[in-house]
Length: 171
Image: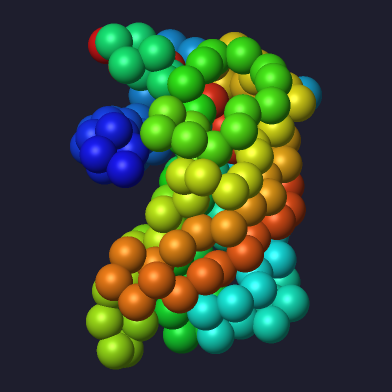
């Protein structure tokens, strides 16, 4: 769990860089109009107040951290009145199936009218990356597993697919 919490620091750093990249006005690597990505995560939530809840999160961005040899994907959106931020983390920059552990997993930050909640997925799940494109390409795949809320230990099962726009690597 300690290693995964260190990964959160990398996640926050990469998200910050992603926001700066997403807000930049000029790019030396414009998006190919023939390969436009639909940067979303289409998921089903079960548990922790959800029953077969179809969830679509947008704003999907993915980046590779060279020093950490880790890819971080992030998605955000609203579910009912809650704000959700999903992070998918795996220690690679290629396709494959990654079983959740201290180096691979998922995290959800949930903001509600009653507080903020963090769900960790580090032991019971898999992320399968079916496509890992170059910069301005797509990182696509599926995710399935159980996340645990850090204070109440409530379980949240998620499954579904994702497609994120790949931004330049960070070093």
